[in-house]
Length: 194
Picture 1 (cartoon, rainbow, N blue to C red):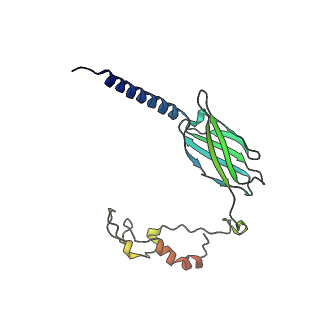
Picture 2: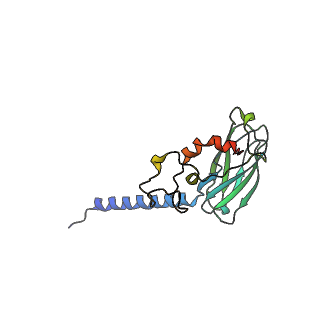
Picture 3: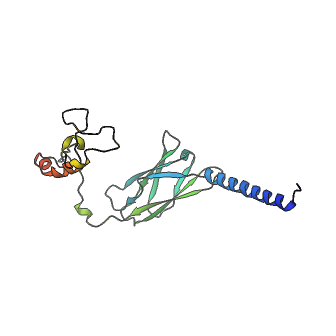
C-alpha cells in the first residue's frame, strides 16, 4: 500500500492538537482550584464585624492571599493542618455596602487566581430576628422514636427493616416529621422553646 503524504500530515496535525490540548489542560490543573467556600456568602450590617472564611482546594497552603477592597480588611490568613484548607479572617466595618469581594491567590511560578465572594444586604425586619439565649430550653427529638404522624411511610421498600415494632428497642418505631408537627402543642406545654 502506498502512503499518501496528505494522510500523514493530517495525523501529525491531530497529534499536535492533542499535545496542545494536554499541555493547556495540565497548566489549567496546576492553578489553584477552590472547591468549596464556607460560608458561601455573608451579609453586611451584623453587630459582630469579624468573619472567618474557609477555603478548600488542592494544596492551598502554598498560596498567599490578598484582598483589595476600600473597607473590608483581610486581617490574617491561617493554614490548617491539612495543606488543602485556608482560613481567612476578615473585618467588615459597619458601613460596608453590599457587593463582591475579590481575593487573589498567588503561588510561586503559577498564575494568580481571582476568587469572588458576595457580601449581601440583610433583609428587612432584622430587628425582629431572635437567636437562642440562656432562656431557651432545647428539646432533642429523635423523630423515629417520638410520634408516628403518617403510617403510610412506615414501610420503606428499600430499607432492610421492613416494618415497625415499638416494643423492640432495636427496631424502627415509625415516628416521623408529621408526628412532631402534630405534637407541637405538647412540646410547647412542656416548656421547650427550641
